Length: 262
Image 1 (cartoon, rainbow, N blue to C red):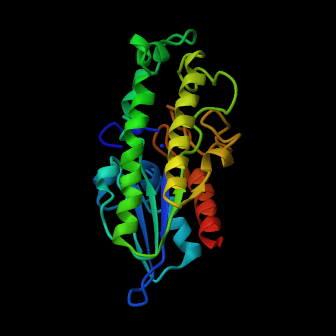
Image 2 (cartoon, helix red, strand yellow):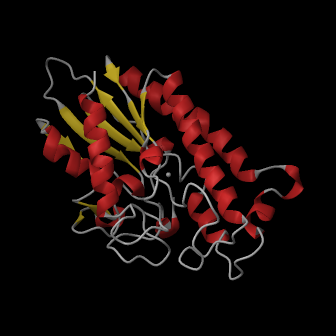
Protein backbone atom coordinates (compact mmCIF):
# COMPACT_ATOMS: atom_id res chain seq x y z
CA UNK A 1 0.00 0.00 0.00
CA UNK A 2 1.71 3.17 -1.23
CA UNK A 3 5.01 4.08 0.46
CA UNK A 4 3.66 3.14 3.89
CA UNK A 5 2.32 -0.26 2.89
CA UNK A 6 4.41 -1.93 5.61
CA UNK A 7 1.69 -1.26 8.20
CA UNK A 8 -1.34 -1.75 6.00
CA UNK A 9 -4.18 -4.03 6.75
CA UNK A 10 -7.63 -5.32 3.79
CA UNK A 11 -9.59 -8.19 -0.47
CA UNK A 12 -11.77 -8.98 -3.34
CA UNK A 13 -11.39 -11.72 -6.00
CA UNK A 14 -13.27 -11.60 -9.32
CA UNK A 15 -13.88 -14.58 -11.61
CA UNK A 16 -14.94 -14.04 -15.19
CA UNK A 17 -16.32 -16.42 -17.82
CA UNK A 18 -14.20 -15.96 -20.94
CA UNK A 19 -15.49 -15.57 -24.48
CA UNK A 20 -15.16 -18.42 -26.96
CA UNK A 21 -12.69 -16.37 -29.00
CA UNK A 22 -10.28 -15.56 -26.18
CA UNK A 23 -7.93 -17.88 -24.30
CA UNK A 24 -9.02 -18.28 -20.66
CA UNK A 25 -7.03 -15.82 -18.61
CA UNK A 26 -6.41 -15.55 -14.87
CA UNK A 27 -5.51 -12.01 -13.83
CA UNK A 28 -4.48 -10.86 -10.35
CA UNK A 29 -5.46 -7.29 -9.49
CA UNK A 30 -5.18 -5.53 -6.16
CA UNK A 31 -3.14 -3.96 -3.41
CA UNK A 32 -0.33 -5.25 -1.20
CA UNK A 33 -2.46 -8.08 0.23
CA UNK A 34 -2.58 -9.46 -3.32
CA UNK A 35 1.00 -8.56 -4.21
CA UNK A 36 2.69 -10.21 -1.20
CA UNK A 37 5.41 -7.69 -0.24
CA UNK A 38 8.71 -9.12 1.07
CA UNK A 39 7.69 -12.74 0.48
CA UNK A 40 10.41 -14.32 -1.71
CA UNK A 41 10.91 -14.13 -4.60
CA UNK A 42 10.23 -10.56 -5.79
CA UNK A 43 8.84 -9.87 -9.25
CA UNK A 44 9.11 -6.77 -11.45
CA UNK A 45 8.13 -4.00 -11.38
CA UNK A 46 9.98 -4.02 -8.08
CA UNK A 47 8.31 -0.84 -6.86
CA UNK A 48 5.12 -2.86 -6.49
CA UNK A 49 6.78 -5.19 -3.94
CA UNK A 50 5.19 -8.19 -5.59
CA UNK A 51 6.03 -11.84 -4.85
CA UNK A 52 6.06 -14.92 -7.07
CA UNK A 53 4.51 -16.70 -4.07
CA UNK A 54 1.45 -14.48 -3.69
CA UNK A 55 -1.88 -16.28 -3.67
CA UNK A 56 -2.56 -15.53 -7.32
CA UNK A 57 0.58 -17.33 -8.45
CA UNK A 58 -0.08 -20.19 -6.01
CA UNK A 59 -3.66 -20.54 -7.22
CA UNK A 60 -2.53 -20.59 -10.85
CA UNK A 61 -0.34 -23.63 -10.08
CA UNK A 62 -3.62 -25.48 -9.44
CA UNK A 63 -6.01 -23.73 -11.80
CA UNK A 64 -3.70 -23.83 -14.85
CA UNK A 65 -5.33 -21.16 -16.99
CA UNK A 66 -4.07 -20.76 -20.54
CA UNK A 67 -2.85 -17.25 -19.72
CA UNK A 68 -1.85 -15.69 -16.39
CA UNK A 69 -1.26 -12.04 -15.56
CA UNK A 70 -0.38 -10.42 -12.24
CA UNK A 71 -0.56 -6.61 -12.29
CA UNK A 72 -1.20 -6.49 -8.53
CA UNK A 73 0.73 -3.69 -6.83
CA UNK A 74 1.19 -2.36 -3.32
CA UNK A 75 -0.68 0.91 -3.21
CA UNK A 76 -3.54 0.06 -5.57
CA UNK A 77 -6.93 1.65 -4.91
CA UNK A 78 -10.40 1.11 -6.35
CA UNK A 79 -9.70 3.64 -9.09
CA UNK A 80 -6.98 1.33 -10.47
CA UNK A 81 -9.44 -1.49 -11.29
CA UNK A 82 -10.32 -0.49 -14.86
CA UNK A 83 -9.00 -3.23 -17.17
CA UNK A 84 -10.96 -5.76 -19.23
CA UNK A 85 -10.58 -9.46 -18.39
CA UNK A 86 -12.01 -12.71 -19.67
CA UNK A 87 -11.57 -15.61 -17.23
CA UNK A 88 -10.44 -15.50 -13.58
CA UNK A 89 -9.44 -12.26 -11.88
CA UNK A 90 -8.44 -11.79 -8.25
CA UNK A 91 -8.73 -8.30 -6.76
CA UNK A 92 -7.73 -7.04 -3.33
CA UNK A 93 -9.05 -3.56 -2.75
CA UNK A 94 -10.51 -1.20 -0.16
CA UNK A 95 -7.80 -0.90 2.49
CA UNK A 96 -5.91 1.89 0.76
CA UNK A 97 -9.14 3.76 0.12
CA UNK A 98 -9.83 4.00 3.85
CA UNK A 99 -6.20 4.88 4.64
CA UNK A 100 -5.44 1.78 6.67
CA UNK A 101 -1.69 2.35 6.57
CA UNK A 102 -1.97 5.64 8.41
CA UNK A 103 -4.62 4.21 10.73
CA UNK A 104 -2.29 1.36 11.72
CA UNK A 105 0.54 3.82 12.36
CA UNK A 106 -1.71 6.10 14.41
CA UNK A 107 -2.83 3.20 16.60
CA UNK A 108 0.65 2.16 17.73
CA UNK A 109 0.88 3.00 21.44
CA UNK A 110 3.69 3.01 24.00
CA UNK A 111 1.04 2.47 26.67
CA UNK A 112 -0.81 -0.88 26.68
CA UNK A 113 -3.77 0.60 28.53
CA UNK A 114 -6.65 2.82 27.45
CA UNK A 115 -8.02 3.38 23.95
CA UNK A 116 -6.17 6.37 22.43
CA UNK A 117 -6.77 5.26 18.85
CA UNK A 118 -10.53 4.96 19.30
CA UNK A 119 -10.60 8.32 21.02
CA UNK A 120 -8.73 9.91 18.11
CA UNK A 121 -10.97 8.49 15.40
CA UNK A 122 -14.27 9.05 17.20
CA UNK A 123 -13.56 12.57 18.49
CA UNK A 124 -16.49 14.90 17.95
CA UNK A 125 -19.04 12.10 17.92
CA UNK A 126 -18.31 10.87 14.38
CA UNK A 127 -16.40 7.64 13.70
CA UNK A 128 -13.93 8.69 11.01
CA UNK A 129 -13.03 5.14 10.00
CA UNK A 130 -16.69 4.16 9.64
CA UNK A 131 -17.20 7.25 7.50
CA UNK A 132 -14.34 6.22 5.22
CA UNK A 133 -15.68 2.69 4.90
CA UNK A 134 -19.10 4.05 3.95
CA UNK A 135 -17.51 6.31 1.35
CA UNK A 136 -15.56 3.37 -0.10
CA UNK A 137 -18.66 1.21 -0.57
CA UNK A 138 -19.86 2.93 -3.78
CA UNK A 139 -16.30 2.77 -5.13
CA UNK A 140 -16.23 -1.00 -4.67
CA UNK A 141 -19.69 -1.19 -6.22
CA UNK A 142 -18.38 0.76 -9.21
CA UNK A 143 -15.44 -1.66 -9.56
CA UNK A 144 -17.74 -4.68 -9.66
CA UNK A 145 -20.24 -2.97 -11.92
CA UNK A 146 -17.46 -1.83 -14.24
CA UNK A 147 -16.03 -5.33 -14.52
CA UNK A 148 -19.44 -6.67 -15.49
CA UNK A 149 -19.85 -3.92 -18.07
CA UNK A 150 -16.45 -4.65 -19.64
CA UNK A 151 -16.59 -8.44 -19.38
CA UNK A 152 -19.89 -10.03 -20.35
CA UNK A 153 -21.00 -13.16 -18.50
CA UNK A 154 -18.83 -12.50 -15.49
CA UNK A 155 -18.73 -14.60 -12.36
CA UNK A 156 -17.36 -12.68 -9.41
CA UNK A 157 -15.71 -13.83 -6.17
CA UNK A 158 -15.12 -11.18 -3.54
CA UNK A 159 -12.39 -12.16 -1.09
CA UNK A 160 -12.22 -10.25 2.19
CA UNK A 161 -9.28 -9.52 4.51
CA UNK A 162 -7.60 -11.98 6.87
CA UNK A 163 -7.76 -11.19 10.60
CA UNK A 164 -4.98 -9.02 11.98
CA UNK A 165 -6.10 -9.28 15.63
CA UNK A 166 -7.54 -12.35 17.41
CA UNK A 167 -11.29 -12.70 17.01
CA UNK A 168 -11.75 -12.21 20.77
CA UNK A 169 -9.77 -10.62 23.60
CA UNK A 170 -7.47 -7.61 23.89
CA UNK A 171 -4.58 -8.57 21.64
CA UNK A 172 -0.97 -9.50 22.41
CA UNK A 173 0.90 -6.41 23.56
CA UNK A 174 3.82 -5.77 22.92
CA UNK A 175 3.94 -8.13 19.93
CA UNK A 176 1.13 -6.02 18.56
CA UNK A 177 1.74 -2.63 20.25
CA UNK A 178 -1.86 -1.49 20.26
CA UNK A 179 -3.52 -0.48 23.54
CA UNK A 180 -5.83 -3.12 24.95
CA UNK A 181 -8.87 -0.87 24.73
CA UNK A 182 -8.15 -0.22 21.05
CA UNK A 183 -7.91 -3.87 19.99
CA UNK A 184 -11.71 -4.47 20.06
CA UNK A 185 -12.18 -1.19 18.19
CA UNK A 186 -9.65 -2.06 15.47
CA UNK A 187 -11.09 -5.56 15.17
CA UNK A 188 -14.57 -4.06 14.77
CA UNK A 189 -13.34 -1.71 12.04
CA UNK A 190 -11.84 -4.61 10.08
CA UNK A 191 -15.08 -6.53 10.49
CA UNK A 192 -16.95 -3.45 9.29
CA UNK A 193 -14.75 -3.22 6.21
CA UNK A 194 -15.26 -6.91 5.47
CA UNK A 195 -19.02 -6.56 6.00
CA UNK A 196 -19.08 -3.75 3.45
CA UNK A 197 -17.26 -5.98 0.95
CA UNK A 198 -19.80 -8.75 1.60
CA UNK A 199 -22.68 -6.33 1.07
CA UNK A 200 -21.23 -5.12 -2.22
CA UNK A 201 -20.62 -8.71 -3.33
CA UNK A 202 -24.25 -9.62 -2.65
CA UNK A 203 -25.53 -6.47 -4.34
CA UNK A 204 -23.58 -7.35 -7.48
CA UNK A 205 -24.43 -11.04 -7.63
CA UNK A 206 -20.95 -12.05 -6.50
CA UNK A 207 -19.80 -14.80 -4.15
CA UNK A 208 -17.88 -13.95 -0.98
CA UNK A 209 -14.72 -15.87 -0.15
CA UNK A 210 -14.61 -15.40 3.61
CA UNK A 211 -10.90 -15.39 4.42
CA UNK A 212 -11.64 -13.55 7.65
CA UNK A 213 -13.76 -16.39 9.04
CA UNK A 214 -11.19 -18.96 7.92
CA UNK A 215 -8.42 -17.04 9.68
CA UNK A 216 -9.73 -17.70 13.20
CA UNK A 217 -6.67 -18.66 15.25
CA UNK A 218 -4.27 -17.35 12.59
CA UNK A 219 -4.00 -13.65 13.47
CA UNK A 220 -0.75 -11.74 13.91
CA UNK A 221 -0.85 -12.74 17.59
CA UNK A 222 -0.49 -16.46 16.79
CA UNK A 223 2.82 -18.35 16.76
CA UNK A 224 5.14 -17.87 13.74
CA UNK A 225 4.23 -21.26 12.27
CA UNK A 226 0.50 -20.71 12.73
CA UNK A 227 -0.27 -17.10 11.85
CA UNK A 228 -1.30 -15.95 8.38
CA UNK A 229 -0.43 -12.28 8.99
CA UNK A 230 2.81 -10.97 10.47
CA UNK A 231 2.90 -8.58 13.47
CA UNK A 232 4.70 -5.22 13.53
CA UNK A 233 8.07 -7.00 13.78
CA UNK A 234 7.80 -10.01 11.45
CA UNK A 235 9.40 -13.36 12.21
CA UNK A 236 8.51 -14.76 8.79
CA UNK A 237 9.38 -13.28 5.40
CA UNK A 238 6.60 -10.76 4.84
CA UNK A 239 5.85 -7.10 5.40
CA UNK A 240 4.47 -6.08 8.81
CA UNK A 241 0.70 -6.56 9.08
CA UNK A 242 0.66 -8.43 5.77
CA UNK A 243 0.09 -12.07 4.82
CA UNK A 244 3.07 -14.40 5.03
CA UNK A 245 3.57 -17.47 2.84
CA UNK A 246 1.29 -19.57 5.07
CA UNK A 247 -1.43 -16.96 4.67
CA UNK A 248 -0.95 -16.81 0.91
CA UNK A 249 -1.25 -20.58 0.67
CA UNK A 250 -4.45 -20.51 2.72
CA UNK A 251 -5.95 -17.76 0.55
CA UNK A 252 -4.92 -19.62 -2.58
CA UNK A 253 -6.77 -22.74 -1.40
CA UNK A 254 -9.88 -20.72 -0.62
CA UNK A 255 -9.84 -19.02 -4.02
CA UNK A 256 -9.25 -22.31 -5.87
CA UNK A 257 -12.09 -23.95 -3.95
CA UNK A 258 -14.45 -21.07 -4.68
CA UNK A 259 -13.45 -21.00 -8.35
CA UNK A 260 -14.22 -24.70 -8.65
CA UNK A 261 -17.64 -24.40 -7.00
CA UNK A 262 -20.73 -24.10 -9.22
